[in-house]
Image (cartoon, rainbow, N blue to C red; front, top):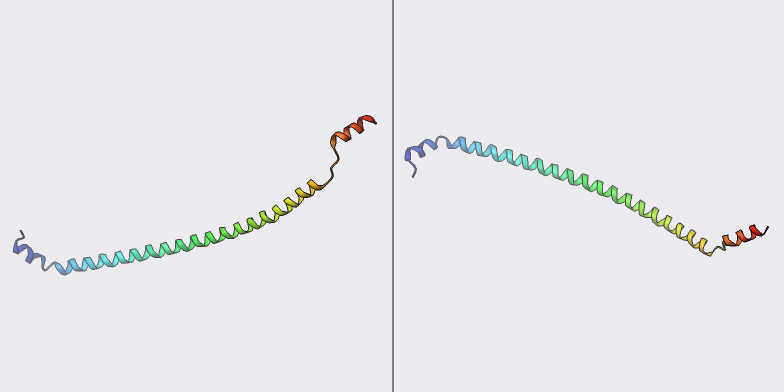
Length: 96
């Protein structure tokens, strides 16, 4: 399978391979930490944006609700008001 000479040739290289692996693992860890930080910052930005949108929706709901009640009151006032019949005015206008 392996030649003993090949194994003995790899032994002096093992510290370099271990150092290379340690450096790679450290860089990978820093990359993961940076991605985590970036993800947390984006999540905070999205949360703040969502909060602003919710506040705007509350204001819009309040405006619509308040205006809706005023509009409903105005409609009811028009329903209960005695409006002259436009056909009746035309007949009187023609008779004059």
